Image (cartoon, rainbow, N blue to C red; front, side, top):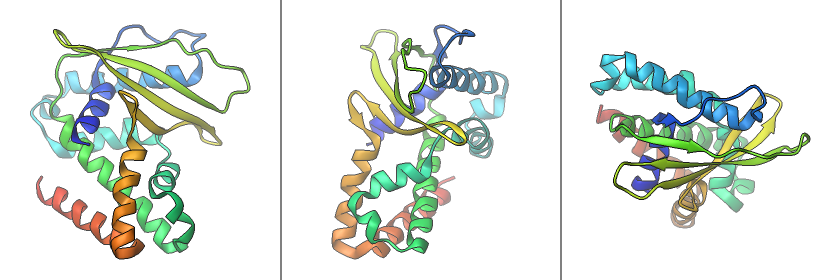
Length: 205
């Protein structure tokens, strides 16, 4: 899981080989532009380069998180148990899962290296509501890492709801872990585990 997280974080921070053109499909342009914006800040901010987590958090909040559908991601990660959760449990699960991803990614953001990513051209129908944007991270002297973004069209624009690193789904990985926790300790047990993990990550700042 740590390798998957590190790879995903890397793809948000690397140089895009081609800028978005006027006729670029919106989901593809969104991925390209997000990377450009994040890189622009990183290159100019010495504190972020030095690992200032507060500034990294602010960068993630402003440039990255708005493009993710955490409600959908949480629902997919919890899987069949989502239907059994109360409205309050669902609300807390979404908050804690989001915090877990953010804190984990913030820690990994400090490991940025000079990588490049190629965003593959996206061919999509004009009425498409669900697409996959494919990318490859190119590391000097190493085989490329392939990362796909599953995106959906919502009332608030295109949002990412899952990522596949080398064919492995981020959401599916968490689903297996969450299912084990729920089977052992119920949904409240999963919430407790997430809260404790988030507290531990927060304390490690």
